[in-house]
Length: 295
Image (cartoon, rainbow, N blue to C red; front, side, top):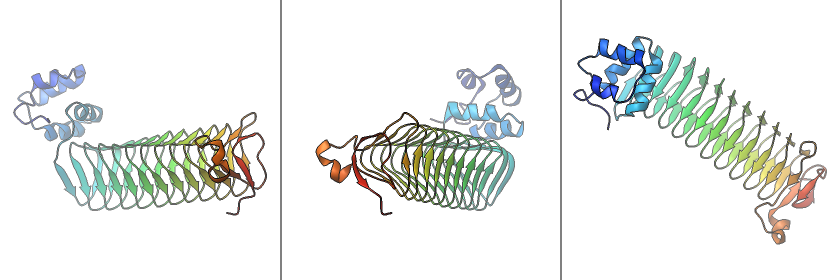
């Protein structure tokens, strides 16, 4: 249960083992206790953004809703949900204990974090990480210099560019290209209407569907099938639970194999473990070669 005005006291805060500097600040400024959100606001105003995030980590979200026309600030930390008619522009961090919803874009110089969903009517830009406990829904593009961690599904109508790891628990749908510097992990289907470019490994628990070329620097793996309109090229192995289909080249890294039908009985390979590409790939270790793919 979130702290109330009466029980949010110095003794209550001390029981959470705060850092010495943060606790001294609280004693100086809120010796008689105070309202949870008022303390968060005061910490942000004092430039103690990390302390505000620590406090939110300790005491959790509330059901409060902050409704604004627009946000332009150094930082914003709110224990409940943030609903903004226009856009959100913060120099460092925007964080909500529950959801963040903006009719316009969301831009943060450092981090965007929500305990539940993040929704934006325009682009999302983060100078570091983008993190949600639920879905991330964006009507334009998403760009981060750090990781994307999504506790639900992710949908963006335009490009997604991620400077770190990309991790989504549910389905991912990208309207244009997906470019990721770290590993890509998708808990369900990965569907990208443009190209997929990964500088590490790519793993989807279900299938991968790509509307252009699919390239990754290390291993490529899907629990079901993998299909790309253009080439599929990996620096490591290519492993599919069912079929593999490339409009052009299908190539694993030097010394690595191409595997299809890993979750299909051998007797069913002709129907459910077909391998198609412009030419037969080298080191085709499993699956049924079906010749050139008519994409």
